[in-house]
Length: 194
Image 1 (cartoon, rainbow, N blue to C red):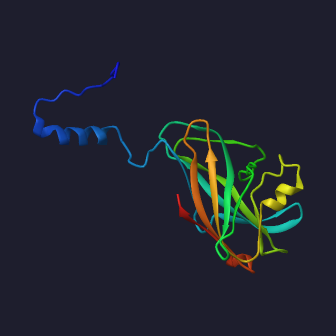
Image 2: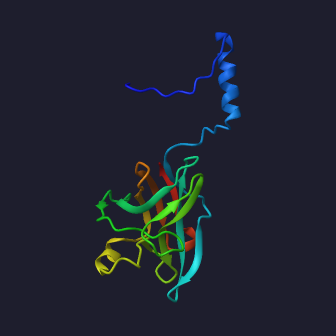
Image 3: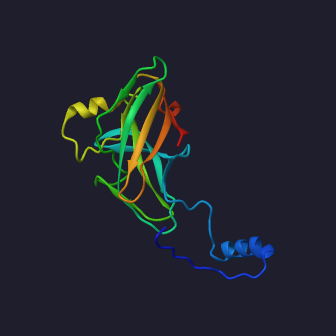
């Protein structure tokens, strides 16, 4: 503690200190949800039915939020770390390949303070409803092996671990439960742990 920088608030009565602190917090409009972190989450309706390259399907998204009050999360890149088949316990660790962000072709994105961006978690084609294609960025991958590695084949329940790295924040990790069904409308993805 070689240096200390403080903006001291003078007070004369120790008994009034709690109310003085509470007033300063209100005055500064401090919000307990502001944190120096990114979080991954999703709502039930975070998907879109779309046609991509002539193929109709459903695209499921994960919301990546920057919880800092004024710092931009720069160069955010996302990956799948592992997939666990809950029926047989088989775990697959994937080679890191960048995932795609909703609606754009770049590898990384910036997320402004107190806002979010959507990540393409996976998509299912109407013609093959029991195959989930994890959200690889097709604009940067040129090896068919990745496409096969980044598929989940067969109806059932799977744990999928996602991670987002940023220049300015610690890695943000979350585990999601993917239920893959024979009908697209019955397939779901929900947050298990952040």
